[in-house]
Length: 146
Image (tube, rainbow, N blue to C red):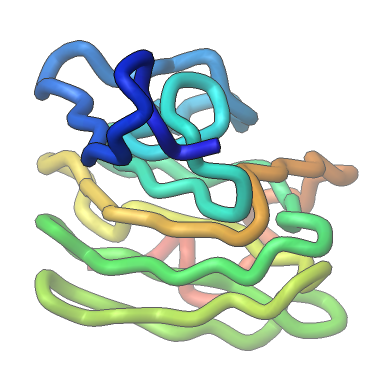
């Protein structure tokens, strides 16, 4: 299944700028896949880049059965979680995060002036399930962040 037309198994390269944007999305987040079922022989892995504009916060969502690993490539991030999204963790460039399957959360760009870029991987695929949103005012420390 990983063999090319010649029968030889070879790596598949997605060139920068040619990533596939036809993937699960949440408003305000741009997800592009570098390795996915959309354009490689991968069947159990999604690996891509997620970009968030300054001050961005996602809608409430989860990633279904997918385990998610993230790496902050540039910028400052926050993830809200918990029963009423009362808990959060902050991250900065070079931090890694694991988000368990089916865990509702909200991803945020803490910086009001600079974009946030994540490298993200999911198994088995890039599943995005958007949920009913939570008002900004209900997110502890969001409106008065520096």
